Image (cartoon, rainbow, N blue to C red; front, side, top):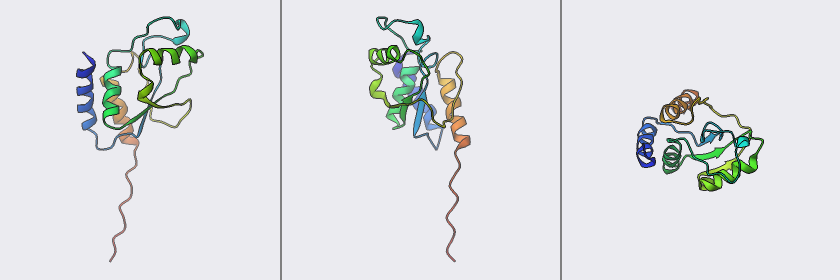
Length: 135
């Protein structure tokens, strides 16, 4: 499935939800790409999971900010791979700890895990109380 096709399907999934998160934070290793950075070299050409780029493009189009949070001991390699994959403009921040809705992905980011994350977020959002009526 190509990036544009994944993006179109991700946009459809986003359309199912009335409330979207303001920020989605991604881990790197085995979430966006299928490897641990510390097992690779800066000279290598990294690749993303096949749905990752399309999902990120859909989030960006919908105005949802994205950030990365990784515990990789080789942040220099992670940064090099982010640059090689031209992902830097996608992210508004690189953070290590935040209170966020998270989803453990076993085989990388894909459309099913994307939908699950949005569903989990939607169930944790507390709707504001209605304004009192003036009588």
